[in-house]
Length: 312
Ligand code: OGA
Ligand code: NI
Image (cartoon, rainbow, N blue to C red; front, side):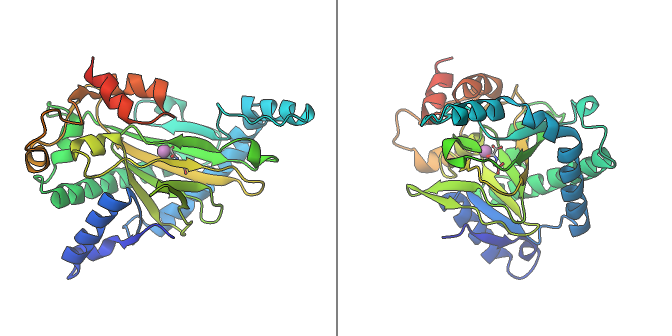
């Protein structure tokens, strides 16, 4: 089984209604789908792949070789231990945001300008995707974006980009690339490797691979979309496995609420689905409080997080 693929350009043509319906189906039944013809120039994506690979070689690889996962795995192998490494990820990762520009990699030629251009384009795409969700959920255009930006007029939502590599691993059976989790935030747009597999999602109790597709963008919805949609769009479990060959690139950009934003199910959706419910499943909370809980509990089931934040 493969995750659904959506031709995003068809939203602008005669097949708009059909495409909206396909996306609604993806959001309701899958929580993950791939976009092709998404409007991000191929030439830009090619440059992003190039600078990301160069950056890994120039500025990250050496550190990864000396990192905790590598050391712990070596120890385990030397001891000929049967144990597994449960509490770590076989991942090299760093974050790009508007706030941390002074910490972006500096040694890789054209890295900064390319990633600025990429992030500008991806943020526009994130907003378009959220507008499609507004429409499919029967909410006013811009509802999700506004909710994530908080009550004030300024733009307070957080747009971040996680640049990850999953380097080859001599004993992939002993650990995971990234442990299973759901994403805390809003909408996530993933530019994954063209060839090296690794990402899997949990669907109806089965792990399904997100098949690599050249220059596609994988979309998924985080915990805050689940709350806002009152559970109509679920935040789905996913994980990355490690493998013996290939250094898997994945660049995940996320449009998240401001830490100060108050998140709650959209009233319109509560009225439709929960008329008789006495105790709503999803509480109202401040996203910053949710993140404090998430940081502690990322790899645990999400439902207790909603409960914990409700009690605050
Ligand atoms: C994440 C994530 C998947 C990947 O960063 O939350 O799920 O393929 N990444 O790197
Ligand atoms: Ni994730």
